[in-house]
Image (cartoon, rainbow, N blue to C red; front, side, top):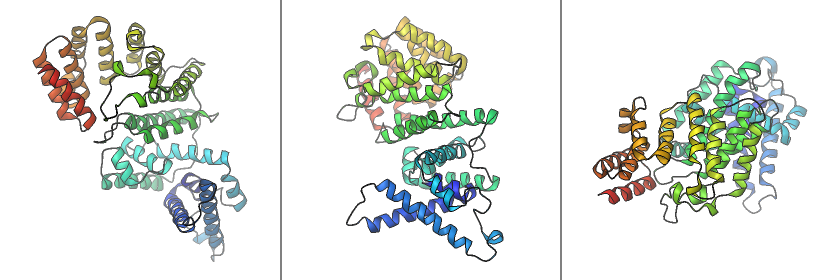
Length: 401
């Protein structure tokens, strides 16, 4: 609703759009006390639309309207018939796409983009965003305020960019959507390792991008494929006590075949043109795990080939770490340890990144260097806030003590 209303009143008046939505929900609380409408979402949309029309009608009755109106007269969507059309299903989706590109403007800091996207595009409260991003109310509030001020000061257009600008902006949008998914897949929340709501929202936004003929580039399909394939494992990643189940121990019968098929469909669709992105390669890697009947049948040689392609596109420390793990599966743990030592700035990552320490702890335990393994497990334990990860690390530590 915020997206449609912002299209009516313009980006500088995004707070007005939010106020109208809040009013619609407040009215719902009053009127739904005894009877909920058959289609609550449609009722809210209709109420918000009527409130927007009421505001425009009041403005038009003001004296010297053209000069005095603080909004809307300069926008092309100001007439009431056009407003009626903007609340049609296809126009709602178009408005949501415009909003995503506004939230992910490249001049905004990534942290501000994510917070703003969750608030405006996904309807999360400030406290929900703070919990999801392991932050606090005031910090998130400031991020959103900064984003709003930037949009207002720059008087940004509520449009989907075209040409070279679309390519530049689309990369930022896709990155923001993937960050949102990753926050849900491995949540920084202390008590909740998986936030399905964040993952589902990221997939929803990704699918929306694929449905627009001007935006649905191969990398969009590849990102949806990657997210769907990863999401297929949700039900197998934790046991009933909330403890982490590693990939090699997961019950693959619990993997969601519908999501796997969706992921494979979009992976195939992403390869219809001569374009390759890191999303393509990452999705292909996850697909190899998805099609293996069990862990022992994993095609590690093929996965290593894919990582060799990926590091030419994205040689981040985490990608290099994951490649080293695959080398360990093929050539043994010593090879993996040596490869990790070659990663740039690895000394810093060993001390600051729980994943590096946890992987090294596991590798050293495999070569029976228990004191080294214990040291890295302890280091990793001090670097994570997740209770589920701490439980796993304590179990690993007890095995090498």
